[in-house]
Length: 70
Figure 1 (cartoon, rainbow, N blue to C red):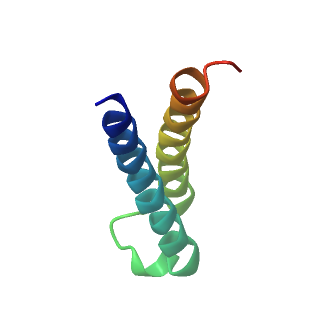
Figure 2 (cartoon, helix red, strand yellow; figure 1 turned 45 degrees about the vertical axis):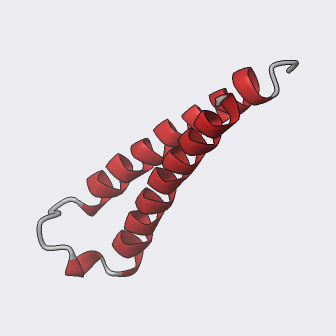
């Protein structure tokens, strides 16, 4: 059960990372196409914060629960 939960959480968190990376790519490649974002840099910053949040969760899971000897 432990392995299933760890795998599910890793998939969940990686999915969020992938989603927010895609959003940053859209903002970088087509900034004028995003009408509701008046401040593109602020929008990118918000997406990067989400990437960092989920990346940190993945790293903590790996460090403390997958390979706790580190």
